[in-house]
Image (cartoon, rainbow, N blue to C red; front, side, top):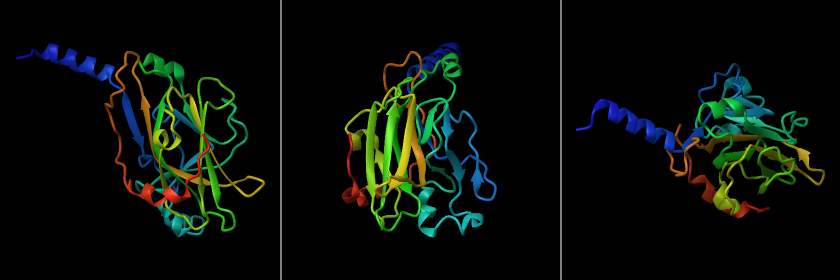
Length: 238
């Protein structure tokens, strides 16, 4: 029989040695008239050019089309993003999430980077003429150029959130990232377009972790079968 002190020590070692995989669904963020703001940082991440929104909120009925209520894969909230002026913290020009406070993370025993795993994304009210391209870029450290890039094309008649399994879809492991930039554009002039993001899965690592095992999962992924419906509309840019 283990003593209580030995058991506590064993659990402490287990918790510090495993990775921490978080599924961020943003449903814990309060909204008013369908809109809300994220804390900074939110689960170690800061978000630039994003807002929380509840797409089915009656206050947004004349702004968010019914076809886009499914932006909130896990109801009621999702993120809405678009291009912003250049981020003062980085070279990114699109909607950007990144390590919010590296020093605080280090003090907590968490390494100041993350692995991007999965997420749902779709353009809002896709333009009828050309459809929309969504581009995802991964940045490491203070690099001014992305280390990783991938994109997907949404035709004008496609309205489901696309489940991105970034390693499988891009062929690369999106690890040791400082930040991720997402842009949506349409037409020959690559005009900015709004998009929504939900159920963002990221992985953090403790200072002593080498295992890569998942320890904590927050929230619940829903609608995972939707990616099958989008196979015919993917285009890749590695």
